Length: 558
Image (cartoon, rainbow, N blue to C red):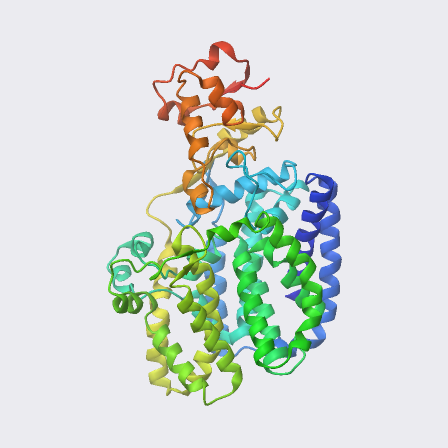
């Protein structure tokens, strides 16, 4: 597990560093980065295998552990084997949560693989640096540059990450942690059983199933979840149990590259490890890992936050998503048995080993804080950190509460805790009522051929939608889907207004094109549907670059 994660993390970090130094992600950069990552992975595997019993990998699973692992494997295979599948010439996906996220990641991968300048500008809005931890997409882009198909990579990287996540969850909390993550979710089981379907049952629920809402669609978690759990498991051994844990350089490199994949996970793990080191009086034991982590982590955080500009996204909102709901009812419906069981475990932890005090205490304290401090424009995004609070509490919850119950009472408690999420996973595995179409293969291939003559540095004016074929070819847009812009903290009202004026053919459209940094204009069925009354003045005054069944491309800038 450690070797694979180090290999992926090192290849991504090397790719980002070499591309930034050279000015673009080119095939030779990808080759060198992947080769360097493979070498680092082999070294990490050799260094870690002798101490695997020290941090959990060597323990054999029992029958119930095997059942939990089998359920996780079945759910992961069902989701990722259908995450990007071509049916009748159309790329489809299974999970509704992927419908908006998958095209955005597809855009990032193609944009980077096309040789975008580094550090990249944002491909979905003009005038913005890419302030997003795109490590998983960068690693994928490196493999795409070597000739591997993107749809296949989305599938098999997801399957591989699921295997790593299973191993990491088992190392952290055995089969209970595996099942509790897979079957997490709210007590909204009544609407699920009433036949509302997966998507409908999740509407209005804040604490959704973490496997479906975060792990499958949020590609940063493919690396961050297993790597973060490995860091916590190793830190628990070193700082709370006084044992070896993973080699310091392995911990340090995983910790250091984490900001490129998921900043929220990096911050959470850093806070927890720091708290453990201080509380347990083992600061010196953590210093070697910190030595390896500090330089890559500082560089990564600086780059993905554009010099810490992302800190402006932190804001105060008491109540999180409770709104006008009754707080007690909200907590009961969303978190079910988890909160009372975790609080009971915390109460028992004060008379027990310090290890559980230092896992349950921070877990519930950070969870409470996240009901007041928002870390992104969309308050629901706090779930990306609440996930870690939940995982941090699971071992103590099992040891101090569930393991002490009789078999019958334990079965009842586990049923109440896991049944709602299990039903959600089963319903999601059945798929949505209608087909979720991401892209038309023939249309995108035609657009990509036409754009081959357009430099990747030139932006294209299109209707701002989440799956425009120009974006799916990896070409930067003047502006993409407003929902994506808003969720990333990007204020693009002026750019969107200029784009609308341009596509509508309003007087002064040439000036609007310059304001929007539009070098090329795309006119297809989406543009025709949005602006049917546009006089399209560029047709008479600007050269036609290409045309086909998909539409036309016009050059606006000389």
